[in-house]
Structures are given as structure tokens and as C-alpha cells.
Length: 74
Image (tube, rainbow, N blue to C red):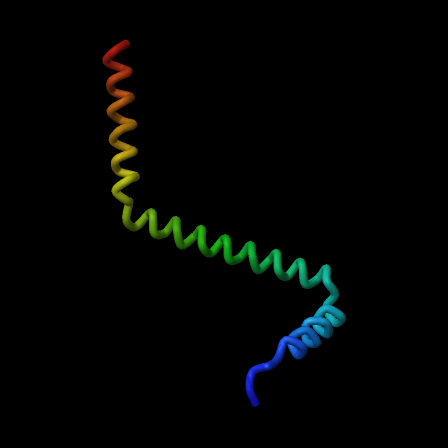
């Protein structure tokens, strides 16, 4: 009663492919991958909104400084 061998997993994979078909399995995989990407993007956006990083603050202030210099030179 140990773990299954590679042959057991191959047989299960073949049976699943026969039942659902490869196109349906590919579509399920794409949908699942899109959901995971969307979840990660949402988590990163929520993290960015709640606590701006130091690099963003430095980039924002340097952009403002450059724009101020360009206006004073003109």
C-alpha cells in the first residue's frame, strides 16, 4: 500500500484522455492557467496599492525633478 508507480499514473492519464478528449483537457488547462495568472495579478495589484515600494517613490520623485528642470530651462 505505497504510492502508485509510474505505470499506474500513465494508465490513469490514458483513461482520462480517452474520456474527456485532448482538446477538452487543453481548454481546461488554458482556463486554469488564465485563472492563476489573474489571481497573481490581482494579488500584486492589491499589494502595490496597499503599500507603495521605495523604488516607486524614488522613480516618481526623480520624474518630477526632471520635469521641473525641463520647465525651468525653457
